[in-house]
Length: 265
Image (tube, rainbow, N blue to C red):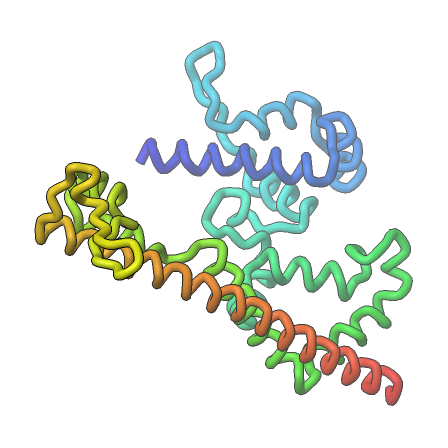
């Protein structure tokens, strides 16, 4: 039970402090606006609110403010009390409902709101919020937009695979013991052939290496793995270029549809 109270207190302090920092409040500026809105509060109060759960000189622990004060603080920062105490990670009940209904993360919903409100567009974006909201509406309702999302996902997947390839060489190396692996890598390009022009070529004999069945099998695995890695590297590069082209093509389709929609409205 004590651990639960400690965790709630830590969450309260962390999120209250975070909200103040996000809005660039000092304790002094926060107190000024809080008093103007609710008619009460002192510097000592704010200090206590930010140190809930901390031990003080008399051995007691700083407790939570009254529920009325908690409601005031939540209302001041436009969040829920549940968010401040860690009962939910959503800042408000409305945000939680929106995120669940749209199957989106809170960060995404905030970004959308920033666009439609004009706040994240430019300093004077709020004066053109209706226009931004309309453009966003036409964008997401365009018939080609779902295809754009699909192509964007495919492009991202292909870029990820290119940057994080599955190494056939590593997989082959896992099948071979370390001592044999080092020798197999050393002998990976060795030849043992008889050539009409140059005569017999035996790199194993020349380097005093016994070409055991086990060694030859290991070399075979490594050679195949090297060839597979080379082939798949080309395929991955081709897939990235192709998906990039398809993404650009559907992007212009979305823009074309958007321009037509806005023009008609």
